[in-house]
Image (cartoon, rainbow, N blue to C red; front, side):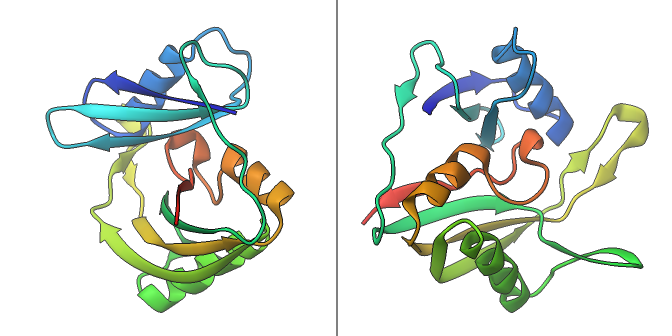
Length: 172
């Protein structure tokens, strides 16, 4: 796995960010990368994590079991039922949703705080809608290093191809 940060134009929508990053990673027949865009209004940086090598990219170290890490992740937490999808709007619901996703990937959620962000535009210009966005921060513990490394490569949740689900870790 390799990571690299690219400077991109401030995206008008989630789909615009997706198109810009896809163009930077051009020539690929399938998406073998995930990304996250951070912007301050005038500058946008896209951190890209790829299974294959990126020119001038930095190799990512593999995580080890029982390690504690600070994390952040941008997600679109929803519950599904026969009536459709319902966004999760309470912190306890988001924590439960996140804990379930991480647990399936060999990671235990120790603590988390959630910031509910303004819903960005999503979709092509004629078919725009808004998506529920939550940024979660906290501490997690690696229980299964193999599964956790796969999670770091592939992300969690939905819309991973649109800049959501990339778990960013910092050692403690």
